Image 1 (cartoon, rainbow, N blue to C red):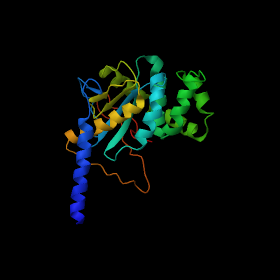
Image 2: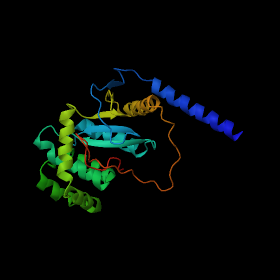
Image 3: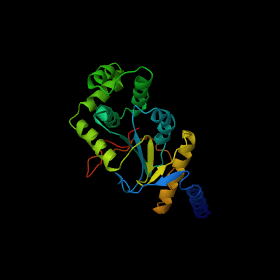
Image 4: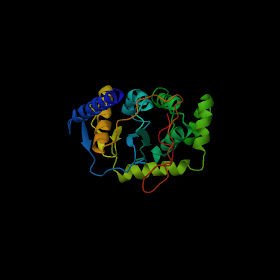
Length: 240
């Protein structure tokens, strides 16, 4: 009986995943990249966001995306990439790398967006940033330490390379499995539903088993080295 229930449950789970994956419209819900972006972890499904702290749409998306990436399935991870179109974005990319490396995303990103949009703090200026972050308490000091680390500049340079190599010309862009880009209508809650379906689509295409939905007793963020070939970033990808 137990085996029968297990098999039945697995079949229902897989059929639910398939239904979700099939309920997508190419060109309406998502597009396919002409050039796939290599994942950092090939055995998992990558959710990659290209964003900018100066992008109001990124600020609005963050409200929906942040809680979503906190609860990704165990076969999926999040990779944030701050775009670098010119030197005015370099310090913001350094800030983003510091946020990821220090694991301060939950506190830092809302504060950074608020500083830029609500308080007109010019965080593109390194001196202004250091003055500001020193007022942010314990997480600010932790983030500043990561910002001053030997690898931080290289991480920002890697972000610039991937921005240029893959011709990222707008933000935000959310890409699943290195190939499927969400086509947003501006309804970010709806975009999160598309994200779930694209994750299911990639899982189905790769013939991956259903993810473990059990919550760990002591959850720990996955840590991934961004150092690698080409445009791969130097940081820890899935810090929550």
